Every structure is written in structure tokens, then in C-alpha cells.
Image (cartoon, rainbow, N blue to C red):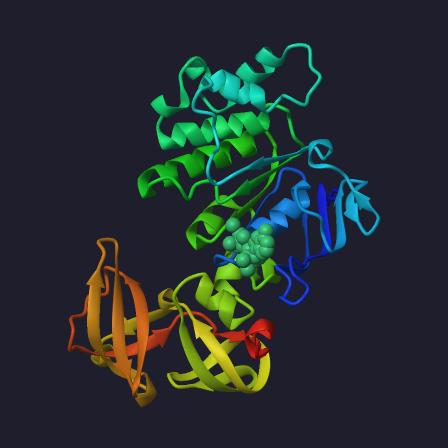
Length: 358
Ligand code: ADP
Ligand code: MG
């Protein structure tokens, strides 16, 4: 693999010495043309971390490097304008009294260029708004305004783009479309980007890799499939979607769980917490199962039909399980059913941040 375009090495940011750090020894890399999402709940330190990378905030410790150039370290702090990094904010912060073109030109104010207008028009063309150059921003839709903000960031041709919850002010329908357009734009132009968001669906669909952040720390980094299907901690399992948790006794590659003996995604021993997503379980009618395990037999409590699929809540031995199936498996509340796992159980580590009492 090529050298990373961005290396973030154990950066920490303390706002107040007494309080826990807003960003706590965060490390990751971004490769050329890669989109990395940092996913975490509100207040976990996402904006602070982006501001440290962009140079609007000084790191308390750690190092930020772009290719071979150190941008921040104990004795270095390159100013934001000198970093070659573009930042797109959540509130697009367009000037209402300036035209779309002048808003984009504003992004070039520190740049000594021959043909700033040509550059700004090219950036508007990249986001598909070349014919809107003379309009006022308030005559544009929210999605178009966000694209103007993106053009303003793209105009100076930054090597890396940071996006801070850029779609969260758009309504649901517009959000999905704009997200897809921006992803295509970044990919078509081979741009590298870091997106921060609290929206798991956004992170999973927008990024090539996802880093899950909690209380200032990164708990797991992986492809969208890895963090969703192979969460390492309880927090990652629960933050990325719904899951069934089973207290189990592991003996190597298998475990005895409340719904029978299951293979595991990795070797473990003793008491472990096992996660199984609702779509990794299915249901069968008791008559269709030869010699059913009594631990798997339950009753449908609730059925939510969603067209192409159905989610069931199933009571089984004093616990309830969520089961997500295609609409080929149709049961009704009250039906007796057998729960059948389709995938190995995922062994969760106890989460470091969860176990510390503070
Ligand atoms: P996120 O973007 O994930 O919502 P932030 O980076 O905005 O998180 O905030 C992380 C933590 O740092 C929060 O506890 C927040 O209150 C605190 N914080 C953010 N900015 C400042 C600041 N300028 N001064 C002091 N504390 C701050
Ligand atoms: Mg934020």
C-alpha cells in the first residue's frame, strides 16, 4: 500500500486540566483517495479532533503528519491556511449578501492565483452548480447550499478534505441524495477525505473505512462490513445497529448460549458476551425442524412488516430476541417458532471505556 496521505499519531486535546481530555490518544491513517468516517455519539470529541487536524486547535500532545510533512507535534504548529486541508462545516456558513460565485471566491482569499474566478467556476462545475454562479445562496435548496460550501472548500484544491457532519442539516430525503453525490464527486476526483458523523447509516454507506469513537478514544477501525459484522466491543455492537446479546460459556471455537450451542467468530473461553444481529437469526416452524432443541423454541410476540422484510420479537426462555427475516418467512404473533442462528456468534471484549468508573 502507498504511504498514507494523513497520519494521526496519539493526538490528545485537553480543554481543561481537570476534565478528561476531549480527544484521548487518537491514532489513524488515511490513504490516497480514501474516505474515512469517524463515527461516534455527540460530545465524543469528533469536532475537536477535526479542528486539531485542520490546525484551528492546538493538540496537547501527539503528532499530525501529511505525507512527509509534520503539521503538529510538541514543537510544531503549522497554521490552518498553510496545511493544504479543506474543512466543510455542518452549518455551511455561506454569506447571504454574496453571490454563489463570490462565496466560492472567498475560499481563495489567501491564495495568490492568476485566475481566481476561473478556479471558482471550475469548482462550481465540479458540484454541478456552474449555472448558479450569480444567484444568492438563499435562493438555493439546502442540498445546493451544501454543495456551494463544498465548492468553496474544493476551489483551493486541498490535498485532504475534512467534513464535519455536513449532511445533518438536510432533511432525510435530501440527505441521502446529497451524500451519494458528494461521495461520487470525491471518488471521481480521487480526493481523500475524513467525514465525522453520529449517524451510523451515513458512516457505513459513505466511507471506505469506519473508525468508531467513544469518549475521546477510537474503539475500532475497519471496513463498514468489519465494524458492523465483527464488532469488538459491546459499544461498537450497539452503536452500529440492533443486536441480540447472549451471556454464554465458551470452550474454544464454540459456546453454550441461551439458544443452544453455537460456533464463535474467534476462540474464547469462560463467560463471554456474544452478539448476534437480528438478520443473523431466522425462524422455522417447529414441525419443520427435526428434533428441535428446547432452548430454541419460542413464541412470536410482535411482528413488524416492512415490505421487503419483517422484524419479529420472539420470547424464548424468559428472554426476547429480535429476528430480521425476508418476507418469505411469515409468522404471526402467538405462533410457536424455533430460533435458528445463521452465522457464528461474535465474541465481545469488555469495552475499556465502559469498565472504567468515572
Ligand atoms: P462532538 O463533535 O463529537 O460532538 P466535541 O469535539 O464538540 O464533540 O466536544 C467534545 C468534548 O469537548 C465535549 O465534552 C465538549 O463539551 C468539550 N468541548 C468542545 N469544545 C470545547 C471548548 N472550546 N472548550 C471547552 N470544552 C469544549
Ligand atoms: Mg461536533
